Length: 325
Ligand code: UT7
Image (cartoon, rainbow, N blue to C red; front, side, top):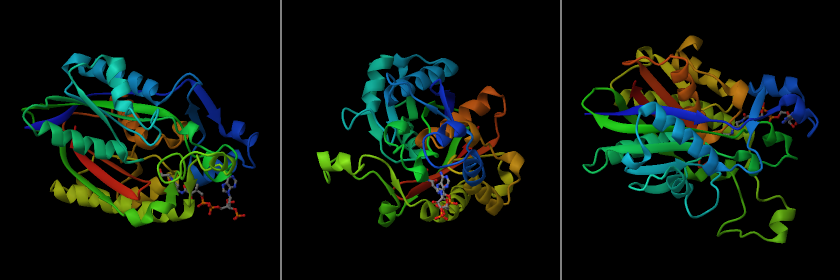
């Protein structure tokens, strides 16, 4: 039995924010951002758009490409670090927008690796008898939790969504193996302090800008480089494969230098790595499905190819999937 991606789609908001725009907002330069991160521009949601809207549009694209109607779905879930609200889950808001009336719905909070975790979760559901079609979405409106006065973080993030419809069939295609791990002791490397049970919203939390992303960038970088390599290798080992068997590496798009270090450590050539960070920045859980959808649109993904997705993020968590496309 194969558990495979039958359709993959994406949506990014229309508005583009360039490095030159950011030069007008904080003390930074286009040159610094390009050289240190590889980012040139990112998309930003319109005031009337939020995560569920982006997720809904990406989901429609994926469903169209799969030729599957919303009523056929058994489960809908959204991976997001920037959900519309704490509850109800953004997955439920999307289920309603789609009219996926036969599906269960919930959210996965697994930060940037949310889609990698989501694919493995979908594989779990589809291994059970009563689940046949599952929709996994990675969607973010990070612009709403970004501190636009903090140059250490505001140059990095963008908004967007990607979605995949997974089905089970008799082929040998699909997710062959995954590796998911975490180190919760490193939670303070990247976090959003206020607005929930530990530190409810107050005038003080607003005044102290505690409703925005806080990050120790250099520390995150160091762990990311190690864990991206380890995760990809562990997932490949579980699949009985080696780096030389990989046709495409699709890494989380957080920093071009992290991506370069990852493929070099794995001994992969640049041509086997899909990179679009220049146009989107870091869209967290959406970065991998947006990349896969773009690759699919360009006809880069051929049946039978080995595709490895790998990601890291707040938690600290990391993971990889090995997919026979
Ligand atoms: O999905 C996971 C999300 N997080 C990440 O992936 C973050 C991983 N980390 C990174 O990508 C990098 O650490 C950053 C891009 C965040 C920072 O790059 P860096 O090479 O690690 O720079 P740094 O933090 O060591 O800072 C070097 C200098 C500092 O100035 P001083 O202290 O040397 O005078 C910073 O203040 O660069 C300065 N700096 C900036 N300068 C211009 C930091 N941000 C900026 C900026 N523009 N936007």
